[in-house]
Each structure stands twice: as C-alpha cells, then as structure tokens.
Image (cartoon, rainbow, N blue to C red; front, side, top):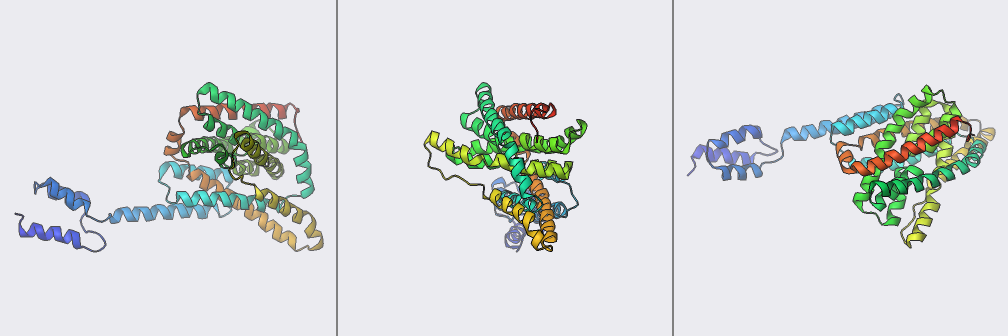
Length: 368
C-alpha cells in the first residue's frame, strides 16, 4: 500500500489545472524512490504538456513573425532575406510550415504583378521577342541533358524529369505543374523540390558576386540570371541586387521562360495520355496588364504614376519576404530527404546550364 502523503501528491499532480508546478525531471527522480516503475510511467503519461514547452513554442512563433516583419520592412535586401530564412530553417523547427508554403506561392505571384507596374510594356514585348529563341534552346538543352544525367546517376525517372523541368523552366512552379501530369508520388515531388530549392538558394547568394567579379553589364547579368537561376523569386532577387536595368531584363526573360510550363505540360500529358488538370500561370498575364497600365495610363492620369511606383515598391518588398519564407522552408531534414543522387543530378545540370549560358553571353553569341 502507498502511504497517504504519496497518494495525496499523486492526486495533486493529476488535478492541478493548467499544468503542474514541479518540473518533469524532478518528478521522475522522486518516483524512483517509490520503486514502482510501472506506476511512474502511468503517472508521467497522464501529465499535461509542459508549460516550458508551450512558452518555447510561443517564443519561436514570435521570432518567426519578427523575421517576417523585418524582411517586409523594405530595409532588407533579397539575398539577406534568403540567408536569414536559411539560418532560421537550419536552426529551428518551422512553426508554420504549411501556411508558409501557401503564402510564399501567392505572395510571389502578387509580387511579380507588382513589379509589372514598374515596367514598360514595349520593352517587355521587345525583350520577350529577343529572348524567345534563347529560352527555347535552353529549355530543350536542359531537358535532354537532365534526362541523360538522371539515367547515368541512377535517379528515379520521374524525379529526374521533375528536376530537369524545374531547372529548365522555373523551379518549384514547373515541378508543381508537371508532377500531377506524370503522376509523381509525394516522395518524388519532395525530393525534386528540395533539390531545386537548395540549388536555387545558392544561386541567389553567389550570382551577384560572380557578376560583379566578371564585370558583367546590367543587360548581361539580367539575361544570365534569367536563363540560369531556377525560381522566379531568386531570379528577380538576384537581379534586383545587381541593378534596376538588370531587374527589368531578368523579370521579362524569366517570365518568358515560365510561359513554357503550358506547352511542356500539354506535351507531357499527350505523351503519357494523362488527364490531369494543367495549371496555367495566370499571374504572367496580370504582369503584362500592369506593364500596359504603367506604360499608357500616366500620360492621361499623371497622379497614377505615384500609385504605380508604390505598387512596384510593394512588389519588391513582397519578393524579399517571399525569399525569407522559401529559405525558412529549407531545413536539415530537407537535405537528408533529397539524398545524394538527385542532388548531384541537379547540381551537375545547373552548373552546365549556368556555365554554358555565361560563356555564350560573355562571348556575345547571345544578347539583347
């Protein structure tokens, strides 16, 4: 029989509202003297969650929200926002993983539309026409090389195709659009997205440094980043860091690449006889509408120019915040889940695309 004081102590631990006053470790030590291991385990299993764990979770959420506020303040550069996100992702457990992924997707699209309010429609059309051949050749080359690398390195066919698609067109957006068409599993999608996100983060951080070291012009860097960096967010982020002219060229050429999601998805669906719904990149059409308004409306309504300038600034801020959210989603678990082979395939393919396009741009073979 247990002594009355001991029974009273156990009862108090079960009836205390909102938690218990002693630490869990201290209670474990005290129960050892009872010499009733089974009773100790039963008591511990019935205890509520620790208040300290609750406060730690709250502090983590507040830290994440503070980083969001800082990155959305307009005083943080896109590469710094991504670096801050990566530090958070590798250091802490993400408190809002699902919400962050959904927010980054829609925030990116809204930010691209906002950037359209700072573009000239005629220049957008001219740049798109000039870069049409380059983007088509780059996409075809990346898909073929990616398929070959996937076979050589023993990567699963669907994962290899998704990684190649993400590298050739627009990173995570292309993978999300093509995955249902090829009926990829969740593990294959996760591996492909992880590979692209890791390399995409590296590209944003090192491309401005390489461009500065090689003394690339604004036009050269804008074209190179648009042809060689995976996601639209990092393309625009790297170009925004390099200069305004590079930003205009990179955004236009990258969106020209993004348009190829539709024909590639249709072609893949026809080849595989898939009936999956194709995701249309409608935000590109809204980007063109924004550029059209910025080009023609201020002549009739001068006050609109200040409004468009504010929307353009909001687009850049939204893009910076998007990069933080993307970086915070890359963790140690992401690296482990990717594995060596898919990462090597993505790395080799990305290095080939970046190197070849850079050489051709510097030699003057391709340009705007």
